[in-house]
Image (cartoon, rainbow, N blue to C red; front, side):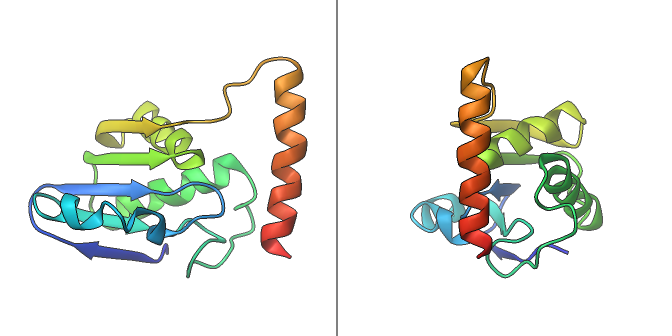
Length: 132
């Protein structure tokens, strides 16, 4: 189960942070969003207060965790916003047909050729640093 916070009233909106972040990544915009939306912001596995899962070092594992959260909470069709790797995850949720309106802010991972090798090697180094 993903750790999450929930505040506000109105149509639900799910926020998914980027690599190395937590639900707190959204604190600057939470008050404004909460004026008109029931905002749900999650901690991805291995981030914030959500413990790592055996597959949380893979994109599929992170995406599967978000999908399970959506299903468990009864949020099918929820509007969703993601940043960085969270943006990739929300695009995947849209592809899987689990969400409504989808906003992907700065989605990474659509690299070609040398970019793929460069980002994969730097991303793995970042993951090692975050996990200690």
